[in-house]
Image 1: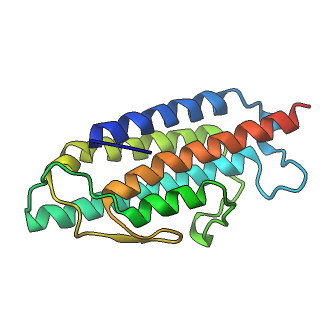
Image 2: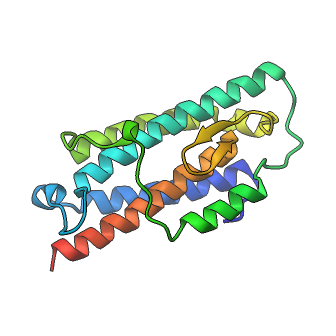
Length: 179
């Protein structure tokens, strides 16, 4: 994970989103609600969870950006990515973590509805893109349940990583279900 610009992060997140959508569009109705043995969530529940997290992340990024805009301090062009965030990102890659209660899926949201919600949160991300590069975001943080205080840029990176992580999980579920 190495990003030089906000545009680099958006490009990586766009690739993650495309892969997620491609994967979910290939899931049949029967596959969507099956839960592989030993697992807690179905593919439909994973999609719902991703949408819930993405909506929250978009709101957090917008909130942090608004705080930075209020201060009016321009960006110096560097991305506020801490060494602690980089270390924890590597560490979490191999861990199975439990989602907080507020983003636990109900299991009642169809994949198509989760995709609509993802498109909506993407619009919010797109609306703040330009300003994320213009303002100094380093002093404004919001706590993540695993990483601790993150800047809007770090939350943006987490958004793409979260989708990629769950896309790989869905692919594994499909391999299991389709055997």
